Amino acid sequence: MTGLHLTPTLAASGALGAILEIVITVAYLVGAVMFIFGLKMMNRVKDARRGNILSGIGMAIAVVATLINPEITGNPASLPKILIAAGLIIGGGIGYWQASTVPMTGMPQLVALFNGFGGLASLLVGWAEYTARPGEPVSSYTAFVISLAVLIGGVTLTGSLIAWAKLQEVMTGKPIVFPGMPVFNAALGIGALVLGILLTVNPANTTIFYALLGLSLVLGVLVTIPIGGADMPVVIALLNSYSGMAAGMAGFVLENMMLIVAGGLVGASGIILSMVMCKAMNRSLSNVLFGAMAAASGPKREGKTGEIKSLPAPDAYPVLEAASSVVFVPGYGMAVAQAQHVIKELAEQLEDHGCEVRFAIHPVAGRMPGHMNVLLAEASVSYDKLWEMDAINEVMEGVDVAVVVGANDTVNPEARHDKSSPIFGMPIIDVDKARQVFVLKRGKGTGFSGIENELFFYPNTTMIYGDAKETLATLVGEFKSAE
Ligand code: NAP
Image 1 (spheres, rainbow, N blue to C red):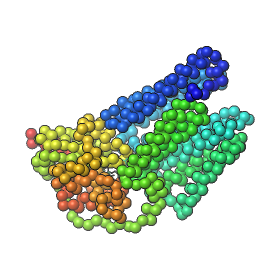
Image 2: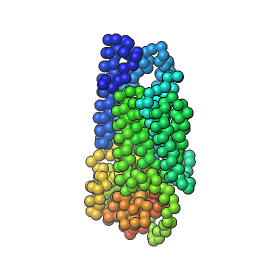
Image 3: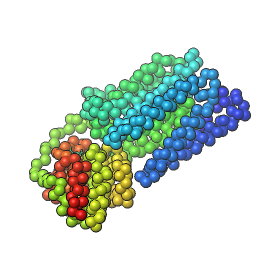
Image 4: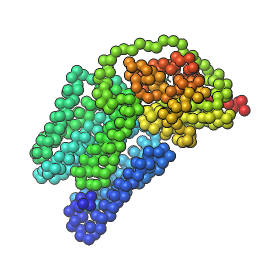
């Protein structure tokens, strides 16, 4: 099997067609290998950027290989070249503009939209193939893969749009549920599968096809609205996986090896990422997907009482100046404040004073996997200073000062002991074990999970209220003026 569907046009063009087929197949293989290596390189922050470029080049090779296929561009029945060129320029332009202008905090929403468009593309491929030859029904096998491409693509499209709307706060982030919803959703899911089977048995029946298409779009909305905004990043990783599966199905529809390989890779990596995120939050995937309905009716928790100490930023200078080891613990607030550059400046000041500086990275700090790594890499913080949660926790007791920069849930000690807590069991960075904890945040705002943090009431914790970037800049100023 060459992996390329030998089209009638290619087959009819004799030796030239055979050569072209080999060229396209080899190009697809090279592209697929580049995807695999690119993905592997993304395991390490150091190589991630190059991995991304490698995968991008692989994709460019795949696009060119597809465009030189005579069925796409080289026969009277193929799409006008101007249309393809316009699609490439407009789509590429919008993608470039979006990716280069989106703030880091808006990245999850952008990924949600990209997933949604991936789902839409697969749905359209299935739809186009189904209606390509009027009066000539597709085979049962093709109807089967088309129904999967349309079903998964449709769910991915509308599910991703809801995820985007929740994160963008265009709609409420709260779970939207109605009585009997799980049963209703399950019935719709089963209904969609039944329609898929019916279409496979009777490919000529367009009513079944359009019913399946409509149902998949409704299903995408109904399975996503009951999930709270807080769990959206996991859902986005899952929808990413769906978009890959839908693309793989579109690959089967078109008999295109490249799409099948790329779809498989995205499908598998998306599901692995969802599982990793759930593990880091000590949640099961089913709890993320269906738990919100149960949590909405959970018991109300009492507010915490006690004294919270705070001091103005300049007063923290003497403590930091005297410290011989400092651990910075960044969280979502660092991303909001865009404090990554000034945190590095402060780290350098501390090091100039002979202090050992480390950065503790929680796997779900921020709003997407690797969020903190990306920001700190942007500020050129050296990788050897980044410590993973388990490693830093082993040495936390010997640390003089832990500086929490806009982190909240990921340092909340109640996750360790309070069984009634929504975050119970989530591994945290044990900043409370350091001799002194400074928490840099704007006020009494809660984190992602919406719960109070008992760390703020601990005797060794002192709050420094204000925007993290401004607080850190004040501290840098103190060091500089003391020189
Ligand atoms: P967090 O718990 O969301 O808390 C962020 C804190 O930053 C807030 O309490 C806020 O308090 C503070 N803040 C906001 N803007 C600030 C600014 N300009 N300057 C200073 N502080 C600012 O953050 P986290 O500790 O990083 O925890 C991440 C949460 O997201 C976890 O619950 C995790 O499970 C969840 N999550 C993460 C991912 C992921 O992939 N990373 C995925 C799914 C869920 P103030 O308003 O008082 O300033």
